[in-house]
Length: 242
Image (cartoon, rainbow, N blue to C red; front, side, top):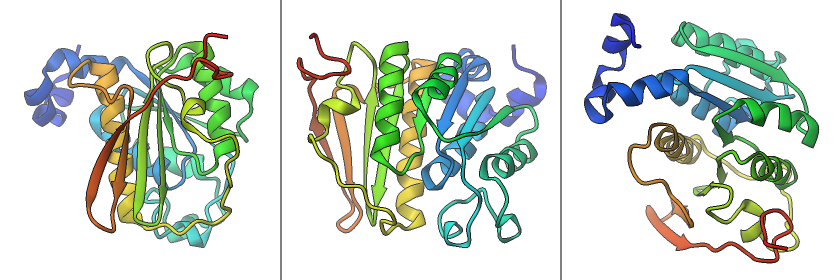
């Protein structure tokens, strides 16, 4: 049930998808793994939508160079642990939300503990190695994983629904070159994070069509979106038939 305060707070979206969907959001748990650029936008948007419980996972501290795009951190937070400051800000914004900050470098073991408790996992990461760990665990635990990535004025979005869609491993080349400090701007991050959260909300509420078996590609240089069909690989070492 929703309180009178919750009905008022979320009235504009209840008008869109109904009170039952809002209750589903209230009862849901979403894990945001990586609370930097994508993750800080995503965590705030999830709280704004009324998700009842957030698990925030990151090991980093706030740095000055984060502040052009990581909206949950302010100048006074430099040197502080990201997930702790993020949890403080989100609780101040929406006191009813439960926020669990997890200060950890993601590995398969701790990722499994986080994933098992969540209804949806949102990708806020900035490297492929860790993304593939999370992808593997989500497939094993049969949990939806919303992947996003950004660079410069470009971004991408993929929804992994285990046993229904390709996983992240399916669509990647055998070798991936990591960039330590790729160029990034807040507008691209915010746009892609918003789309990422929108997919998470669809999964939780059942309202709207989830981006299944497709990858959304955004080109901010020309302000164009492309939707590409993607396919499960039978020989995928994570979700394949072998």
